[in-house]
Image (cartoon, rainbow, N blue to C red):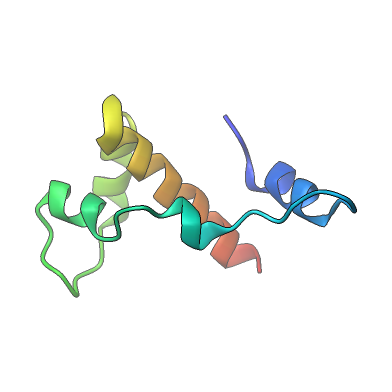
Amino acid sequence: MINSSSVRQQIMKPGKKKLNIKKAIKKPGALRASLGIKKGKKIPAAALKKAAKAPGKLGQRARFAQTLKKMKRRS
């Protein structure tokens, strides 16, 4: 599992390419749609935590959302 501090260190190293978060998000709103939450509403933390344990794309998207949430808070 990748934590945000190691991601930040990779971003800050000279000679390394920066991570492009916009390119990482291929299908905006897909997590929200799969969880059945209406557009414009926030995804509850409990629902995100439960979805992160799921296998496949749902779990992958939920874990990525958790990572982005941590990065936003630290900046």
